[in-house]
Length: 416
Image (cartoon, rainbow, N blue to C red):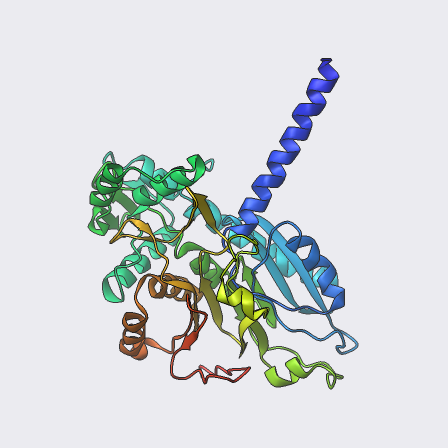
């Protein structure tokens, strides 16, 4: 074989590996479905073709005022997912500036919150893990804030989401790669190291120390939503509004939708009025064998609920996009620390509330609790603000919080 042919084969293999990696990143977290008009659909079709099957979409109209159009752009390789940003602006150049602002801010937070990458001249979550049981690590205040809120929510709301459980999560990630179930003894040892009290935060000196060498932090259940909330607040402060961000399915709506002059023919948009329309996608695998017997597949509907929102977050947790098949059984990525195995009580759980970080935490929490436990928890939390939920049950039934009326196509959320 010539060196030329060897080089070409290496090049083809690298390209294939790159595409596979890209597809895996895109499919890891998508959770809601969006519906775009024809001029935007071309962009979305390209993204969907690479594996983005679930994400939150706004129902827009193609007919706007003379000075504004709808633009959609994507940002990749941050928080292991594809980010879709859509909104209204006077020109593509102006909208691109907003997207660049989002990308820059999110990239900074990605570098801080990652537990998988070494970033040059940055002390991040991985740096803290690498120094577990050795020494405190001086970190950015934004890491301190994320860890403090995650620990606070764990103690005051529910201990189901534990950011100190990184060791157990690592074992399952390795097991998925090797197509095997993790060793039970290894899981037990990792669980003993997952005491959230092992995370010692010194705010005055801005340091974090893990008391046990075996403890590992993993903020995957909260970091993406938390980061989106920070950046969205900055964007709004800078006057950027009428924007919808879908960060792999973690949806954040900034402001209200601008109603075009002619919208009579778009009945969905008329129902949503000045709100953005979000469709919660049907929880299916898009795999003939895995969807055999799936009640949602039999219903043949693109979404299980449509809601109208503004200045709100919509986050869904489910394992139908990020999973592994090991020894003929499907295993999701959301680990129940009581059993140390992936949870499988629900097909999906969606949370609607203002704060994207809290929505991320709550969607995972409700996915890990029983339906009755989850409903009771939301009743207790009424004092901290409105949190609504939609449960897609394994049976195919849809359950909701009391404020969501069964049978209605749209639910209007007015948090003011």
